[in-house]
Length: 174
Image (cartoon, rainbow, N blue to C red):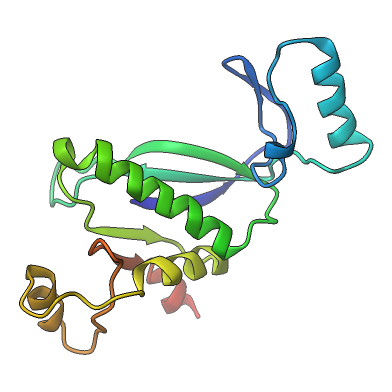
């Protein structure tokens, strides 16, 4: 699982039968369907007048890709607009939901999810810390054996065995 944030243009978009481009932090409080004019007017009021909902200024893109040396293809599975009000515990809930859905529907076809990677954004790092630093693998398990060979690294991982891989370029730049 990889995720990163990208700047997006602040505007509404038609996505299926809904209004897209509205921040995911506040849009659950509003009906974003394109069912009638009063619904759209209510959403426009929230965005432009009362400011209780916002256009996304950045989108978090969640992608899945194989862990291999060749034929690597990351496939975006979720694109979520954000007004940057999201906290790391909230993002951790989203990531945990993605992992749970993957375990149910994707693992059988694509294999186990081994690690998660993101950039140096503090919210992303905090969310990864909550999820991927919560347990130590069982002694003797394949993961315990693999991690114990990495001198200088800790043994923590997620409850389902995934490890976190932060983008080191942000550490090197500092």
